[in-house]
Amino acid sequence: MDWTFWAGLIGIAALWGLTQWMFSNRRRSEKTRARDRESADAMLDVDRGKAQSDVWRGL
Image (tube, rainbow, N blue to C red; front, side, top):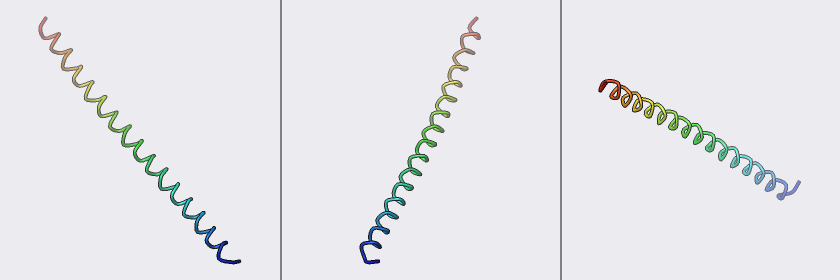
């Protein structure tokens, strides 16, 4: 085994580590985005509830 084998092995390991890191960042950002979307939906529901109570209060 010469140095090209070891260089290739290190290169493959580096590429594998890089792809794992990129996919974990992508999953983390998707989870964060989903959480933000849920909180935004909850705030919209609260605003709708307030608007509906104002309509019924005026009658």
